[in-house]
Length: 93
Image (cartoon, rainbow, N blue to C red; front, side, top):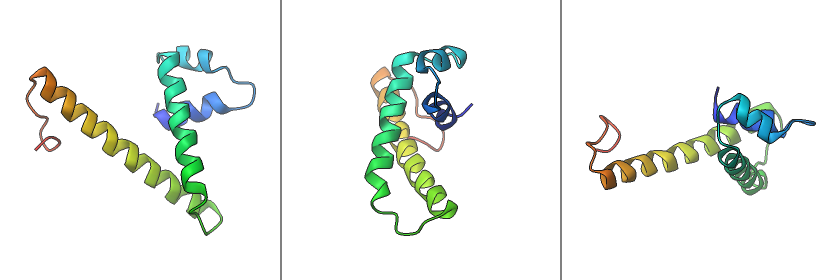
């Protein structure tokens, strides 16, 4: 299941973040971090959305996910470099 879906599930009314984390075999601390990042990104970008409706919401989600993917890709590349592992094809070049 995708991170975004897990975060949304954990934010549902009556949901327990700890139970959602266990169900998806994710550390509760990791889930809390994902939730924090998700909220920060939504708060930062909501003021920039001038159009209303589903299309604007989807565009916001795409921008935020692209930003997160870029950050994670960089983190993986840096960690692989520090560990002395070879670069992944097409990512660290």
